[in-house]
Length: 226
Image 1: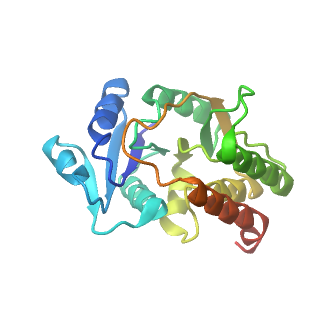
Image 2 (image 1 turned 90 degrees about the vertical axis):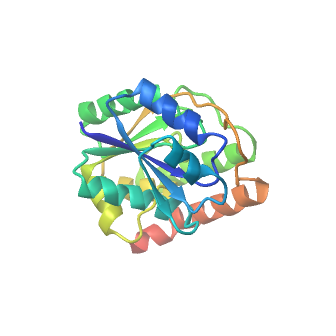
Image 3 (image 1 turned 90 degrees about the horizontal axis):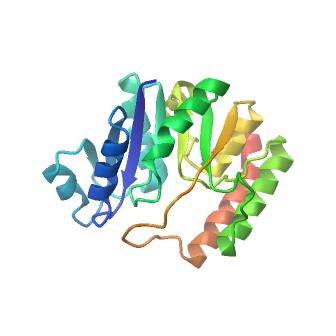
């Protein structure tokens, strides 16, 4: 499989060099593209100085648009699959071959690296939201996704085309729910993830509540119109 790791990055100067170097060491056969999403810090300068494969967007467009930029690159350059890979060092590159193996074994459209497939329970405010999203996906599609908010997902060529051509597809749990309802093959593999290795996440409590609310509303209502 010809795989591209798409790495959306916004103000990740503290992590981006270590993240890309780690990915290249662990997975030398995997191509990558950093999508610098209008960072105001030195993210772009570091990518340039280290000779990374990257593209810079002129303003911050948020995750969906940045990831779609990487998907369009993958589509135009004939990649078989794209792995969504965080710039902050949370994702372990060693799981990429396992995601690819699962995709080939199950002929899957989406493979998700799950933190909770082993029975571990999510905790805190995010854990409550996570369990609610899992329940709503099960209710509306009949599919159990143990880690719907996992940011490490592998998408096949068919999904790359969806992201490239469809205006309402995003790297979010409601898209996973939509694809499950459309009978796409979605599988999970057990995985571990690290804490953010630097910088600050925008997901404080108000953002978590807002994000979970929008996601649940989309799964319950809006996906039926798509």
